Each structure stands twice: as C-alpha cells, then as structure tokens.
Length: 182
Image (cartoon, helix red, strand yellow):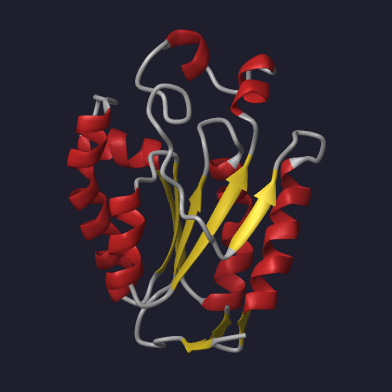
C-alpha cells in the first residue's frame, strides 16, 4: 500500500460523485458533522448549490465543460484556506478529476454507485421525469474516475444514514492520522 502524506496546511476535498439520484448529496449532508469532527472545519456544497449561486442554468455537455474552471477555482480556493470541502456533483468529467488530482493536495474520490434505470423506476429524482435530454448517465456519457478511493453501492435497500456510516468507516481505513493509504 502506497502512503501519501497529507498537506496539513490545506483542507481536504471529498469529491462525492455519481449519477443524479444516486444519493450523493444526501450522503454528503449526513457525513458533514463527522468529517468536521475528524478533520476540522468543513463545508458541504452540491452541484445544485453551485448552479444556483452562479446562475448556471444550462445542462448541455458544452455548458458543463464550460463550468469546470469555475468549479475548480472554487474547490481550490476553499481547500487552500484549510477548510475541508465535501463536494457532490454528477457532472464529473475526466478533465475535471484529472485537474483535481494534479492541483489539489488532499483529495479523496468517493463514488456512489447506483443503477440509473433503477433510480428512474423508483422516481428518485424529478430531473428524469421533467427532462429527456442533457442527463449525465443517459445521453451525456459519465466520465467517472476508474479507480476512486471509495465506492459505496447504493441499491436503495439501505437508508442514507447506513450508507453514510459505511462511507465514514471506509474513509477512516484509508485516511489514518494524516496519511492517505492507497
């Protein structure tokens, strides 16, 4: 197992990604208090929060790519101030996670794996009922990292708190006393 020493002068970026409706934002909200306790001051921000704050109302692949530099500057700004950021987003593109790995010292990739067809069938997210295009995982290809640090399988049989507890347990196994084990 390779050890990576954490830069203690920077916050930790916890990127929680997955398709819309997978539970990533709900899980992110549930882990915030525990992350704050374990690793210090923490904020939780979703892709929806970013779109509302910066009035980003277009969802095409082109617009999503155009928003990446804004998201990346925001993530770097927060973590450079020694604040942890739990950032949940569905529009995860290869260009974004490659930039993040290169430019943010303390980063943990968390993938919430869920079947998009089951999400649609269970009506977990209104976007699938209202919109028929520009949806990551359907007509926009999802470009998720091939080897995320943590994978949480959400088959919708466990409640969100149990999934959050599972995530914290996995996180504590790879991030021990300021050292990331990978």
